[in-house]
Image (cartoon, rainbow, N blue to C red):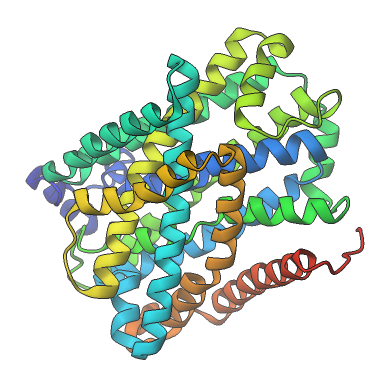
Length: 426
């Protein structure tokens, strides 16, 4: 898998300083756009609908904080791949003790399965509601479509990147339209974005779910692989340029993803919080939108869910394949990886577990798994023997430590709450 000769030649001209046009910068776009779909997956739909319906605009600050943390770690992941031409899983296997690597792999595989559960179920729910077919049938169709898109990797990076980019644009446009259809209290939304608050212990669970749905373990692994070997830099100067282009792409792509997440909460709050705070399921939200906002709003919601489910399922499989290959050193056929990650989703449906509950629980699992790649990435990008002059500056390292500490603290509080420890309101 690689770039076409024409694209590689164009990138070389930009790095050499022979082409300074604005359009030439688009040659470097792709990795952050692909990674960004992980921040708009069906798990986000589930947690954001529940948060907006039950708690109104009050948890928007969590979405904002999570997105800022995500930007930092995605930028670090991309830098790791650009500088070392290795991905995070590979470098972890090479630089950490074997017992640590085994533990990391186990946790990361659980996270990959939880990720694929959310993404696979989301696409299946969308198909099920759109075409009035059983959920199991929707899962089969989602699996086939996902595999078909993944087959585009044989033609290089661009086909899959363009497909994912188009689906990202579809999700974003859908929520622009949704905000035009729903009544929004923008003053309350601004307050919820800027003033941290948790209205009761239940809000804490919702906050951790949002965090788990926003900052994604598999996206941290994946981004380093997407930039790995994409463009071979011939000098430190070229590497600095590549890192700078990557940072700009991360900023743009994840700003879009963050705004979409906030729009999900705002839409759910505007549509459900005042009269229907009990709405907590994707299916209920879809059926409730028709009488509240009209069939157009319900249809757009379903279309965005379907686009999100299919695209994020593709990205989840790519990440899972990269994680398994990186930690084991063996090349895994994409078909086998696709089947392996589909199994948990089928088990959940066959057992009759509520699909939206499964989505939310999967995000909490991801939140607990998240510190593993975050800590590994922080350690590796701070080591000069790995990164050379690109090792993290002190301010970047401390910002990453703070982001990791926030996640660890929220997870610890949620664990205490799970075991019956009362958490005071803020």
